[in-house]
Length: 463
Ligand code: NAD
Image (cartoon, rainbow, N blue to C red; front, side, top):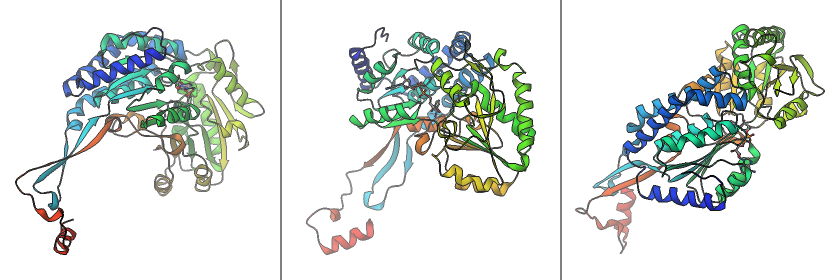
């Protein structure tokens, strides 16, 4: 389905075609779902080079990052889904109460219908196609709207998807605010949105017009807590990897660090050493280090640097839109860098006497998408895992939970609603349909009028 000049008509038209396709039941069989997932797999493999080039154009992504966090991530998700899909689709039998005997009960995962996927720009391929994998696995029709802020990747998705997937059931519309607004007017069966909080509210408001359920994959400030018993060298290495991948433009990157006073200097020294080891002394000229997506975000991030105590980094390069890995010491809690999600290569480091005392600081703020804790203290680890609310918690590493397709991914509170990846995505985009099948041959009259005290006594026992 190729829409060159998206307008209200085309949004309506594409939606109507997808609706019609879903009504034909073509997307329900296991075989159709497997065929689409395999076609997506082939597309990613055959066009890996082109996709890597597009990701490099949009975000200066180095080849290794483009492979691991985008193409490789998707291939793993598809493989996992293909391996388990038949089992996930099986109706789950449940017991039937005596009042409904003879009868059988089961839960059938049922496709929702037509799903609108609105992708974000920071992992423009992964964040558009991972929800697509879930939607197809669950037997839905899907419309993909990649982010316009990553135009090379968006264009390639638009070009490749129709060549590989069932054009009657999967469509791509490129565009920005105007096109997305038109798409949001259609009565979708589900909207899967990844991006910031402000647009999430627009999406939810539009969805409410049709009582359309939404998945909102948002962001926020993900804290990273470093306690004195942590192995500081490994901690620093992992933080540098997770924070400065994609130049810090990762929804689950550590937004700020809280470190115990007694290991603060050691951590700062180790971070500095690791930044140099991973990105050299000239990170701005390093092909392994990404760029900021556009001028607006570059200016926003440069603004955060003003009036801050820069411990390390701070160099900026306007023509390439690059900002060096930067560590900022003890910013005021009311400064914009501590109020807003940074979503870039700046890392504030705050100090506390004891991590356990800083937990209130975390709890008083919006629930984070991810929370990181570095410690060898199992009591503290248990305490944090059991008492702090966050989309995901990762102890002694950054972002590695994303590599486990058995773990659901999603936020809580302001960091989002709904989950996906692996089975969670399949379930998110399926309706758990309750089915009871009865027989005619036994029809006890106890529940029918005329009622009597005997019937009531019996019903009380049976129900
Ligand atoms: P963005 O600018 O790419 O916007 C997201 C989508 O919303 C785009 O497709 C865009 O076209 C659409 N959009 C923009 N304005 C709109 C409007 N007025 N009406 C309708 N649609 C509109 O994304 P962003 O907001 O810059 O993304 C950054 C945020 O996304 C951060 O907060 C980050 O943490 C979050 N994020 C979350 C995840 C996750 O998986 N939870 C992943 C990546 C990013």
